[in-house]
Length: 523
Image 1 (cartoon, rainbow, N blue to C red):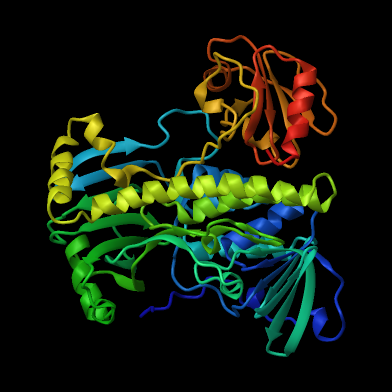
Image 2 (cartoon, rainbow, N blue to C red):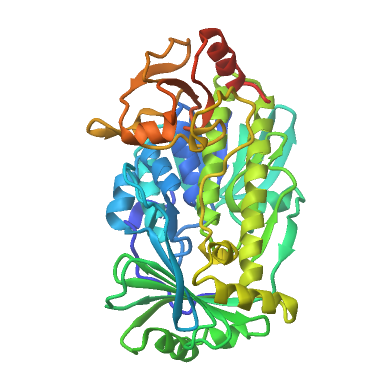
C-alpha cells in the first residue's frame, strides 16, 4: 500500500523475537491475554499493570508499523498517557496545537480554539506520529514486570468455554497454546479474533477515496489544523494540513469515488498534487496511502470471555481524530473493571457496563463522523446546495458553523448515569463526565485521581469511605467554575478511570457508600 517506507525510528531490539516458554513446556493459565501491540493493546496492558494485573501481549508483527497513521492525540488521551507513564515524553516530542482554521476556497470562514481557558495540565491536542506513540509504549511495557510482550506471535485458533479461552499461537520456532481467563482483542480493523469468531461490523461504508501523504519539508506553517473545502489548489474536493514533529507534514486530499488507487500512489502523481498544496517542490515524500473509510461497529463489544476494544470493535473516518482517541477511552472504561473481576471485587457481569458505555460512545463517534463525512462529500442536488449555503453563512453565523462538521474533534463521551446529582452544580462535572482538570498548588487535580475510587471534598472535608481515597481539594478560580458553580461546597465520588460517579452539594456518608458500592456492579 505504501510507496515510501519511513526511516527506522525504533530501538532495533524492541521487536526482537524471543522464544516463549510455551514452546518447551505448558504455560500456566493467564489472567488476561491481549492480541495486538498497537497503541490500544499496549495502553491496556499498562493500565492493567497499574491495577496489579498481569497480561500477555501478542502481536504478529516482527517490525514496527509503517507510516504515521494516527497523529492527533486529544487532551483526554494525554491524561491517559500520564497515567500509564508516557505523557511527558509524548508532549515533549509532539507538536502542540489548539487552533483550527476552516477555509472555503481561499477564504478563511472561521477558526476555533479548542481550549480557550487556562488551568489545564495538558493541551487540547498534540500531533505525534503513531510510530512514536508505539515506541514509547513498547519501551514502557518492556520495563514493566506485569507485562509479557511477545512479538512475531500470531494467533491462529481460538477455543472457548464458559470460564476461559484457549488460543493457538504460531511462531517462527513452532506453535504453542495459552489458556486465559479473558482475551482482549486490540488487533485493529482487520481483527483476526473478530474473523475467527465470525463477527461482522454494522454500519456505513463510504465510496470516496482519499490520498494521505506525509512529507518532510522545512516550512513556516504554524502548528494549527487547516481544513479547506474546495480549495483552489485541489479543485472541487477537500484538503487537510497538519504539522508533525521532525518537519513532517500530514496532507489529506479528497480524490473522489472514481479515483484509481494505483495511479494516485505513483510518486510523480503524488508529487504533482503536493506541489500545488505547499507551493514548492522542495520536500521529500515519506509515506503515501490511498484509502476509503467506514463508520461501523460490532453489535456488542463483549462476547463471553472475549472482549473487543479500539478498531477491532469500531471504525470511523479519520476526520475528527476519533479513532485512536476513542480506542484509548475504551481502555479507560474497560481495564479497571477487568481488574476488579480478576481480583475478585466484582463478577463477570461487570463487563456489561463496559459494553453499554463504549457502545454508547461508539454510536456518538460514528454519528459525528458520519455527519462530518457527508458534509465533506455531499450528493449532487439539495445536499450540495445546502452545504454550499452553510459554508457561505459560516463567516458570520454561529448556527452555520455548527453544521461545518470538520471542526468537531474528539472529546470524551459523557456517559448516561444514574449517579446522585444535586442541583446547582456545573454541567461540565456532572456524573458520567471525566473529572475536569484544575491547578492544585504546584500540581494538578487530574494527577490525584485514578487506580482506585476517590472522594473529593471541595470546600469541606470529605467523608472516609472504605476502599476509596478521600482528600480535600483546594478551591481556586478553576475549581470553583468547574466543580462548585454557585455552591460553596460539594463532595464528588470519582471512578478509577477519572469519570465522575456521583456528586452532592449536601453530602450524606450513607449515600456516598451506596454510590461507591454501585461502581462495582453492572447498572
